[in-house]
Structures are given as C-alpha cells and as structure tokens.
Image (cartoon, rainbow, N blue to C red; front, side, top):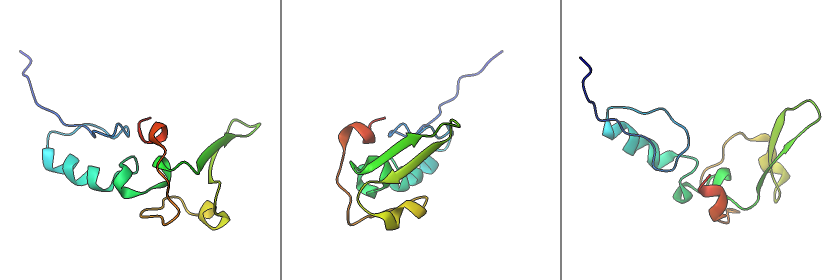
Length: 88
C-alpha cells in the first residue's frame, strides 16, 4: 500500500528536484540563481539568451563583456532586477 510523504521544492521554481529534507531546500534557496537577493544573472534585466543556427542556446550579459565568460555570477554590482526573469 502506498504511503504519503512530504517533499519540498525550491520556491523560486528553478527546477531543482524535490527533497524530503526542508533544511536542504532552505539552504539551496539562499544561493539559488533565481533568488533576486542573490543578484545572479538569471534575475537581471541585462541577462539575455540567443539560439544559434545549430540549435545551441547561448546566454550573455548585455552590459559587460567581462561577464560573458563566467557561467554564474552572484552579488553582481551591475545587477538590475527584471521581475519577469526572476519568476520564470
């Protein structure tokens, strides 16, 4: 007979798998790239993406070329919140 369990998922809807440990998700959310307080590329109005002819997707910063070679930025001093990107 099946049993009911409680699971937790990121409140920022980043796609991280569910877990049964609330503390794991709480810790994750503090550093989640979709958390606006983290000031990461995914919630910034300067972050953009483009698909090339081969179907590959590229992400980049429209403000600083220096940031384009870095996969993940946190606490970016150039960050400006884009609400629609933070809620994807």
